[in-house]
Length: 205
Image 1: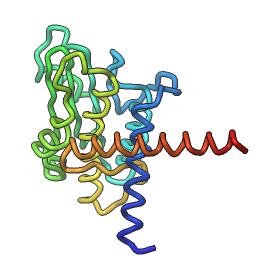
Image 2 (image 1 turned 60 degrees about the horizontal axis):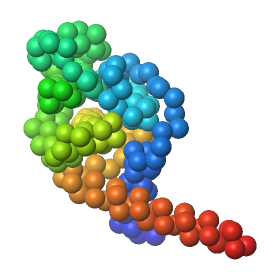
Image 3 (image 1 turned 90 degrees about the vertical axis):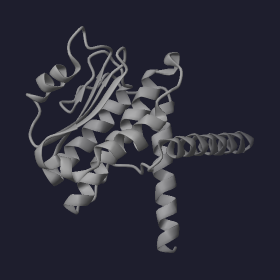
């Protein structure tokens, strides 16, 4: 098998895993991670579990702590002040994505030298924004998880690449969020059809 074919197969497999991860019913109980601030259950439990594994690996291999903050609202507090207060408890050097649903606020933050390890504007505009639902009632836990996770993984991959290490718990994120979302849906449909075919074949046997 050529290297290019291997890459395609590897990417397809990872995208399939992401589809199953986000769209199938949750099978994990509520998961608590020091890398995730999710007090109002804005993220599906599987997202929190995945982020924990990825953040732990990233920290061990690069020394960078990457956090994900997902809130229902700011509880009347100032956006930047809230970020600064949370960051006091983060292990340095760090970066994080901050999301507040009610106020429709999303921010990508990095401190010190970590700012040089990835492009904050690129992560925000090309990996998070394209996956933001147009209708407010579509801002579900699954959709919030998808858009934040896409940006989170891109940060992790960029940091790892600059450090010259490979992340085993990551998956492919593309430079256009809409592309990865469409591919996720397509692979999910293909995987579902394959399962149906297998089940029908087994029943006939």
